[in-house]
Image (tube, rainbow, N blue to C red):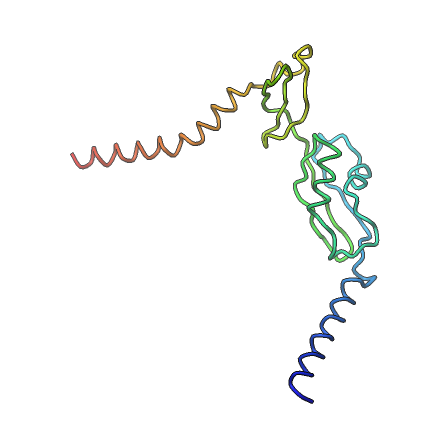
Length: 167
């Protein structure tokens, strides 16, 4: 047998083995577990349903990013920390609750944001009591600028100490 035929048969054999593994009944999704922080009010069943993962699909072909997007689109106040394959037939979904951290006023409405700057809620001007305990965008800007300023301030202290040492 020539070298070319051996390579071709090896590739075909590899593809057959890979296809068998990917679509084998042994590696089918059978169990979905939700691990949620204590403050999450949604049931595990609701979260699993929102993920839109089909029971029986190949564990290797699960689109975890799509599942994360589906959950976060359905439940704006949830953040998916991780979707992890825990065995050949089970995945674990870890979620936590998002909390209002800042608000921004724009065109007569208040946009309530979490720490990742995701919009959690839009509040009308007449309902401002809902955002009474949330810091404004000025606080957010100060924190962001403070984060940028911290390395510069540290550098200034180091340069000052070097200059004093040289004197």
